[in-house]
Structure formats: C-alpha cells, structure tokens
Image (cartoon, rainbow, N blue to C red; front, side):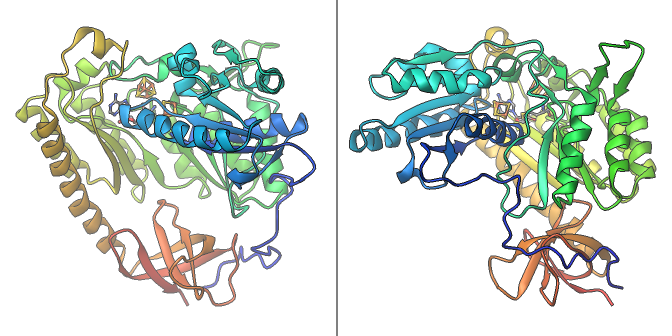
Length: 468
Ligand code: SAH
Ligand code: SF4
Ligand code: F3S
C-alpha cells in the first residue's frame, strides 16, 4: 500500500523561496529563540521585517552585526538561561566593537528598562507587539543610543507580514492565528508579557497558508495561547464572524494533502464543533494538546482555569467519542501553592484515567506580579516539588510506553520530515497523532506521505517498515 501522495519533485536539499536569503554584503542578523512555538514564529516575522530593511539572516553567530535573543518568561529557569547567554554575548561584544545585542520577546516585556541597567550588556529591548519598530531602534543603536519599545497593542497581529521561514525541511510551518491571552490563570505571566487576546484577520491566515501550499509545504500548525477562543469579526460586516471551528474547516479545505495541526486548546473553551470538523476532514491531524495543569478541582479553582476535574474529563470523553483515534497530550504543574498530597494524587489519577500519549511536566515557578504571587504562598518546598514532579514523570513514562506498544502492528500514514540522525538509510516523520516514526528510506523523499507499519519502539520513537 504505497501512498498516493508520493511527491518525487521535492529535492530534500532544495532551498525554499520562503527561507532566508543570504547576502554577505548586507549587515548580518543572528537570532536565538527560546520559549514556545509562538516565539519561533515571531522570530520569523522579525527576520522578515529586518530583511526588508536591508539585513540578512545568518546562522553563524561569529558573522553577526546584530544578535537578537527572543526570550521567554514562563518559568524562572527560562529567564536564567537568557541571562547566562547575555554574559556570553558580552564577551563577543568585547571582541567585535560594533556588535549590537537586542533582547526581544516576553522577557523584554516583563523586565523592560531593567535589561538596560548593566553597562554594555544590552543595546535594544523590544516587546512582542513592537517588532515593527525594530529596524528603527537598531539604526538608533548603531548611532550609539540604547533603544526600548515595550508598548503592548490591542490590535497588532502582524497580519500582512509573510514570515521568513526558519524550518529546515520546507515541510512544516507555524501560522499564528491570534496573539495575547485574556485568561489570567493565576500562575501565568503570559497575559502580562503578551497583552490581551486578539484574533488575526481570517483572510490573511488563509492567504498565508495558501502561500505555504504553493511553496510545497505539507503541514501547518495554527498557533494561539487558546485557539478555541479565536473569533474574527469582519470590521466591514460585523455579522460576519469566523470561529475557530470555521477557520479550521476553511484551512483544511485549501488542500487535501496539507496536514493541519493546532495548539493550544483550552479545556474551558474546546467545544464539540471543533471535534466534529476534525472528524470530517482527514487532513486535520488526530492530535489535541489539552493542558489539564492539575487533576484536583481545588487546585484548578485556585489556578483560575475556569473548569474543574469533572468538566475536564467530560471534554476528554467527547474527544474519545467523536475522534476515537485521537492522541491527547497535556501540560502538568507540580507543587502549585497549597497543593496537598491528596491534590497531587488526584493529578496522578487523572493522568491514568485519561492515558495521555505525551505530557510536558513542570515544577511550579512563582512569577512576580501574577495573581498567585500576590495572593498565595509558594509553600510547597523545592524537595517536595521535585519528588512530586518525578512521580508525575515516572507515571507518564509508563503511560507513554503503553501507548507506544499499542501502536505496534498498526499502519499509519507518515509525513516524511527528514533523514534519521542515527542512519542515512532511514527517514523520520510523524503520524497524524504526532508520534515520531523511523523507517527505511527506500526511494522516498522529504515531504512524501508514506504508509508505515509499526514493528517496535524505543522510549521516544516508533520503528516501522514500509507497509505493502
Ligand atoms: N496557553 C497555554 C499554555 C501556555 S504556557 C495553556 O493555557 O495551556 C505553557 C505551559 O507552561 C502551561 O500550560 C503551564 O503548564 C506551564 N506554566 C505556565 N506558567 C507556569 C509557572 N508559573 N510555573 C510552572 N509552569 C508554568
Ligand atoms: Fe497562561 Fe492560562 Fe493564558 Fe495559557 S490560558 S497563556 S496558561 S493565562
Ligand atoms: Fe514563554 Fe512568552 Fe511563549 S513567556 S511560553 S515565550 S508566550
């Protein structure tokens, strides 16, 4: 059973015309990106803006005239890593006199002028809604003036800017459909660093996806902090509204050979309309990231998540009923303020009950000025957080291993993303459920769809053979 979508046209080494254009005669821009997929996509927007202003992107930090670090504030350790990198860049600045360093993204928004306090560390600070001002501030910095713009916006979505793609394979791309967040989960810094929620013009999203299709991309991931609350109201006709379910359907219809993914879903807003659209279109991937955060209703209330354990389990039951083959993943926070052993046990039991295919698991990290920092005490000790997190990780490893062994013997359609790191003779790609599969290369190319039968697995990967 070979796939009908085999695409022999794609040369795996070919450079796509949406990728950065190298030009050694221009000043060189280097970007390092931390944090979530939205930050990755924002870096692509930033490169696009800078390329239009005469800068060329380089992957070689030693060639850089401008270093930008796109930062994350979600947990303290994310920020500490950036402070460490800034000290390393300072050493580079000593060697190269005109080298400029800019901090952009969530840490720029959270810390503002504080980032400019240490002499010769940072020249430019720009928050997530001010990237259009970046070329100006870089010019100012070239004249020796520090530049800062951390204004948040109610409207900015960078709607008409075509991101310069940083993916390596020309197969999958991120498309931001909204910015900011209105949810105010009590532990979370995002509403402060990214501002209020706003949806991007649906037409500009469809145009961007069409451009990707025209350039042979095979997969898009629609991004937002809470995609389920996407709601575009046409300013010319306020009766014309586009919900997330509508948008998902419109994107899926653009091409049957384009895979459509999205993240992140919010349990309080994910409705059955979205699930039914997923069931209707085979090119919308069977994978939902539905962060629970905790299995205890008392903790969920304190986290201001807007749902309790029963509601969450009701959403899981809807997914399992409407989309029986759908993989489900989650985020879990261990040791939130006041979390008791009983609350922690409820998180473990929720994980078993749902049977997550994958989870991102974190220790609670207090973020200054959030509601949790102002109102609650971070009273679970570091040792206890570590113990609980380790229990959560051990349990998830066990559940993930069970999920993988259930896949053995089954055949999946895999979108080829690249050559395996371990062997030139193998390719790797993902199933609709977002699981990585390694299988023999044969004559297949990056960008092909291949039916693969799973024969075994390692802890992270499924191993398959071409299905006959
Ligand atoms: N908008 C998404 C997730 C954004 S942040 C959502 O609501 O699900 C990604 C994850 O980081 C969160 O789901 C949460 O699990 C984790 N996180 C956020 N703030 C945190 C904090 N203060 N400490 C530890 N983990 C945190
Ligand atoms: Fe943070 Fe909650 Fe918004 Fe997610 S939904 S970004 S966790 S405030
Ligand atoms: Fe981090 Fe900002 Fe994303 S805080 S997780 S980079 S929205």
